[in-house]
Image 1 (cartoon, rainbow, N blue to C red):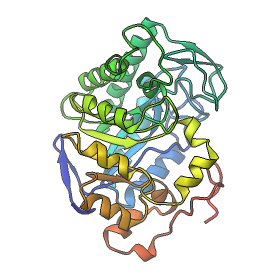
Image 2: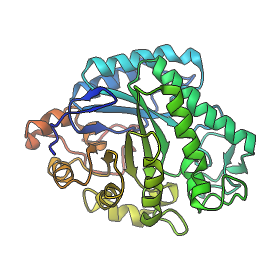
Image 3: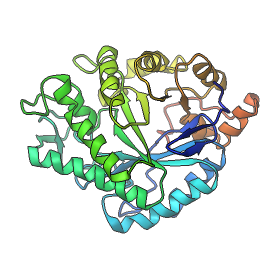
Length: 352
């Protein structure tokens, strides 16, 4: 398999195997809507040549934000802005997906966080309360409502954010889910929340939309999800009407662990081993992510059958034309991310 290989999912042609993954920009308007700056940003990135653009974590329900100026699709009146955004991405030749999100306990903005259990995030340090059964159902429905709005806006599909320690992965992880009702206990019961969301979202988007699920294959913390459990999670997801599994890892306790992050900085393809193990267990396409912005590494992942798509984040942030240059073999022309500690993606100007 090559970077340039096209593929069709749900009747939609994806021109190559390069994915721009969801990365928060903080470019949303004050009401959480799509801003002109955001439209210009995604239009420019799509013009650079990726086959698929997954628009950043987008809030599905009030009370679940993670940071300031976060994009939101929790109200019908926000749909027109998303319609413009989706059309700009698609007219530049990329498939457009919207990532659906609820922060749960990992929030820097909510006064009181909600979670499967009343266990606060040690990084965010917010008061956290346990969700009641009816509230859980309301959030499941909110994901479906958000997915419906994304379809009305013209997106080709949606991605459910079940990774990185946010609400869905909080239900899945034994570290953060200590419930004793039908949403807690065994892995199958902890998976009830994401499985319900997948089913409700699929019903909302219909059979023609692409549905991706981003999952944690490993949380890198004691008592959390490890790769053995990650493989079981992937098998359960693959039995549902999901078209893509987007394999990532970690949560805030890991991301803010200086020693662990220092190890990750030393090598490229930091999650390749996780993608490889998950890929061997599932019958549906897989997106690999994690420092794949060296084109040689990205090509190798595909050639060795470790994934069906490669998500290139900071590479496309640093160089809009990373896809075009990598596809043409112009690796020496790419402006590479140096993985410094300055930019925090978009918050500050890139020193390059």
